[in-house]
Amino acid sequence: MTAIQLSNAQAVILSTACARDDGAVFPVTATLKGGAVGNVVKSLLKHGLIEEVVADDPDTVWRHDEERGPITLRATPLAHSTLGATDEQDETPPAETPIVPAQRRKGTKQAALIEMLRAEGGATIAEIVAETGWQPHTVRGAMSSALKKKLGLTITSEKVEGRGRVYAICD
Image 1: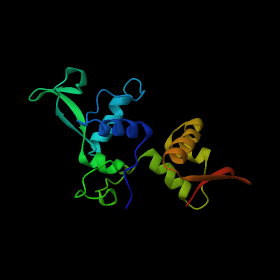
Image 2: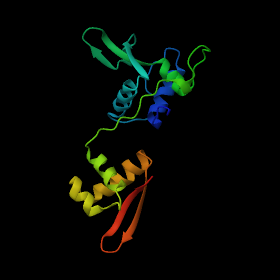
Image 3: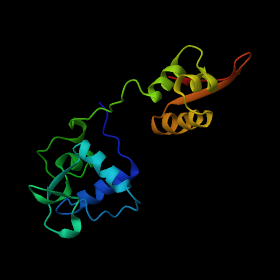
Image 4: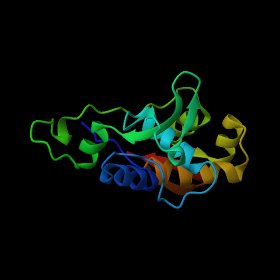
């Protein structure tokens, strides 16, 4: 069973909220710019780590609801247990907290890239470009960023005579 993986921004926002007596997410203390705060809290909402409640303070409004009025966000008990910040003895330990599995969409270009790299013999940049329609620099960027850094996959490359540089995922 795996734990919920939090990004640095998610961890900062969530731990700040859990440290507050009311569990309020806002005001956000993380140094995020533009729509990044919205993206982070949407992800936390999706995982059930924070919830929407009626806002008492106009400075903490997340959004406005026609029925309930101003809405803000606060940390849930799942957030406290995920961070290990629970004080109550009768609560379920973090290891037994229900886990939200990472869901990957099927049929995406990233899924096709992973499939090509896992196939016997791997794939060249030209083969991946032909399959996905991406530019060569996009293929290289996807391998280094999305696959290596975000998904933690190990990608090898070797020069194969008659084929060029071939990339593959090592399992």
